[in-house]
Image 1 (cartoon, rainbow, N blue to C red):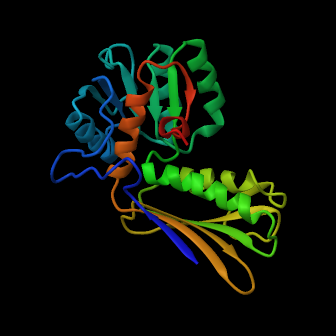
Image 2 (tube, helix red, strand yellow):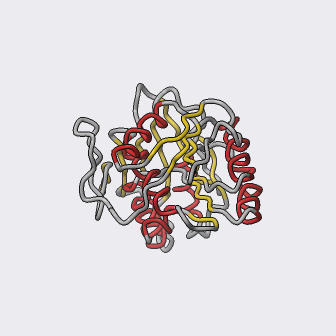
Length: 265
């Protein structure tokens, strides 16, 4: 049995069309903001397009380390950079009291320090391993299925993620979030491991292939059958739109939040 989610995405949100340069059926009860983009690669440029189309002003487009001068007094920062610089980028922005939406993965050992800083500075912070609206609904579906399957030990769970060859971290942050969702409801597994495993660690297979934006599959296998749920992203704009929506939601709030808060899941 297979259940598939294909971005972009679902429920109250519809796709962002790069060709039409507009959004449809999206929330409109947000304030126009001045946004600084920290990390201006492929994702940063798509976020720029979407945020501008939704009426926001981009006041900084940074590839360098952010500071009080080059941030240009934004209302909020959206950070998509690289694992080795993400902590410093986010730390610098929060130190200035500027709320941050961060989508960079691979640096999370220092995340508690960032959350403490956000609380000390009385500002807002959202980290997301994946801001795609469909993926966050997929997270919720994953937890519901894991809760159902915990009473059926004859099924062995496994995860697979496929991304483009330029992605530096493995497994993906999204795969780790999915693994944590399964571990939350498992009496057998006490952690995850990259690659195959036969012990008490949940196995995650990470594949790097061509220009794949991101595909995540969860399997429950028994001797007689297999259950699979899957999310397939077709374009980075699904991630970028979710990040902009997260920034719109975070504006004016203080505290530590996730996409569950943004989407009311």
